[in-house]
Structures are given as C-alpha cells and as structure tokens.
Length: 404
Image (cartoon, rainbow, N blue to C red; front, side, top):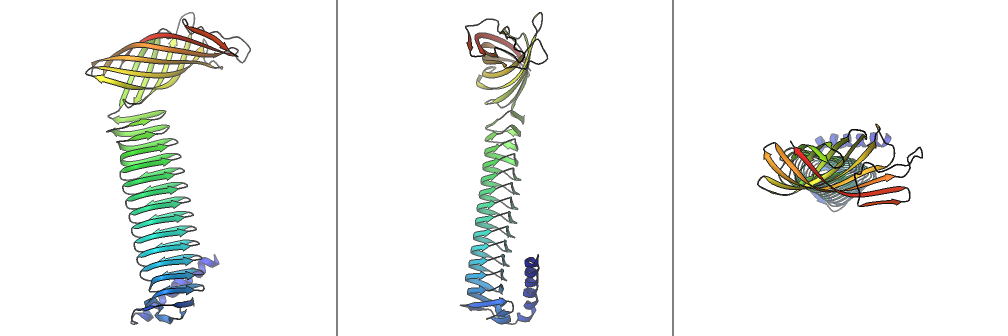
C-alpha cells in the first residue's frame, strides 16, 4: 500500500507542475537524471523536454522520450515515447508509444502502441496496439490489436484482433478475429472468427465461424462455415462444415430426425439423430418383450454418405448397454452395431430406411453375484468365444426403420 500511495502522490505532483511550465519552450535533452519531480537536472521544465537518456532514481516525469528511460519506481511521459522504458513498478505514457515497455507491475498508455509491452500485472492501452503484450494478469486494449497477447488471466480487446490471444482463463474480443484465441476456460468474440478458438470449457462467437472451434465442453456460434469440436456444439445456421461431439444441434441447415427401428435383436426401438449430414449424433432406446425381456440404451454417430434425388445412403455406429430382464444390469453387457442404410425420402418429413448390419456383443462371464451370464440377446452367431472372463459374440443382421 505504501508503494501505491507513493505512486499516486507522484502522479499528483506531476499534474500540479503543468500549470507552472506551460510557457516553457519544448526542447530535446541528450540526458536527464531525476530523484523525484521536480528534483531533476531539467528542473520544472522536464515536462516540456524530450530526453534521449533518462534515469529516474525513484520516479520521473518528462514531456517525451526518444531513447532509453529507466526508473526505480515509475516513468511518466506526458506526450509520446519512442525507444525503451524500464521501471520497477509502472510506465505511463500520455501519447503514442513505439518501442519496448518493461515494468514490474503495469504499463499504461493513452495513445496507440507499437512494439513490446511486458508487465508483472497489467498492460493497458486506450487506443490500438500492435506487437507483443505479455502480462502476469491482464492485457486491456480499447482499440484493435495485431500481434500476440499473452496474459496469465485475461485479455480484453474493444476492437478487432489480428494475431494470437493466449490466456490462462479467458479472452474477450468485442469485434472480429483473424487468428487464434486460446484460453484455459473461455473465449468470446462478438464479431466473426476467421481462424481458431480453443478453450478448456467454452467458445462463443456471436457471428460467423470460418475455421475451428474446439473446447472441452461447449461451442456456440451464430453461423458455422467450419468445424466445431466439443462435448456440446450449437450453431444457429450451418452454411458449410460440421460439428463433431457428443451432442450437436443446428437450428437451420442441420440434420435432425426421429426414427422408429426394428431389427433381429430388438423388434422395437427409437433413435434421435441430430447434427449435420457429414456427422450426426445418435441417441437410442431399444426393447424386446415377451418371455425374454431385454432393453437397451446407448449412443453413437453416423454420416449420410451419399444422396441422389430422394435416395440416400447412411452409415451408423452405435454402442448400447443391454439390461437382461432387469431395470439395470450392473455388469459389462455391450451391444455394438454397424449398419448401412438405404433410405428413400417418401415425403418432406417422412423416409423409409433398410439395410444390413453387423453386430458384436461383449459380456462378462460372471456378474457381481458370481452367476454366469449368457448371450441370449444374440439371436445366433458366426463367432462365440471366451476371452478370460469375457464372452464375445458376432453375428450379421438387418434392420428397417421409418424416419420423421
């Protein structure tokens, strides 16, 4: 707190000196040294002096810089700075910056910045920036940015981004992006993305994605012209490209269907398909009633491989947990199915599909009570073999379905 109080006192002293020096002519000085303003070799005229070499024991206040400035606590420039600023706590420039700023805590510039900013805590620019910004906590730009922004916690831009944003927690850009956003938790752009968004949890693009959104959980965009990879993907409109994940939903231009199915294993089944023609998710429930009751639930994925007129070929892969006559079977009992469907679009919202399938059942030999399990869900087999305590059964089959 003492350091911050000292800095505020210093900035107040700098401001109070301006009224005393307005009539002094601006000059360029090859060298100046100060202890704290106005204790400087330039005296009270320092705010009207542009220095080539400036050394500030504690802090300094100058009109401009064209060269090198070093300060133990703070360097403050009233107008523009061109060259290198080094400080233990902060660099503050009231105009433009071209060059390098290094500080232990913060670099704060009112005008545009070109070059390198590195701070232990914060870089802030009230205009556009280009080059490199690196901060232990945050980088903030009220204009556009081109180059590389790297922060331990957050990067914020009010304008466009051309380049790379990397942050430990989040990146937010108020306009469009051409380049890369990479964050440990969350990325957001309020404009369009032409490039890559990669986040540990979520990516949000309020306009168009032309490129890739990849996250550990959720991707959201208004229009998709590229690739989404995440656990959940959402796009209002699909123009070109595809989402890939556990659940993908596209409001316009995607693929959505509900199918009632029947096959040699389960005569009753229902499937929800959602995503795109290239890659869609499948969520399925199936059952067999009578003396032997089985039901199964599972998920999978598929693709509409080819379409011509009202005819379409699709390939589906599903894996379902089979419950043998009980509400839940608590041992490994997985039914995997690969099926090739030939679909006829009979009406706008109605289609009929049929085709061959290949099935695999993997079941434990013993359940938790030590009772041997059979493979009665398999109607027949071309292979039935034990591998230690696991039984593997293979058989061909066929299916038929109606799609809404």
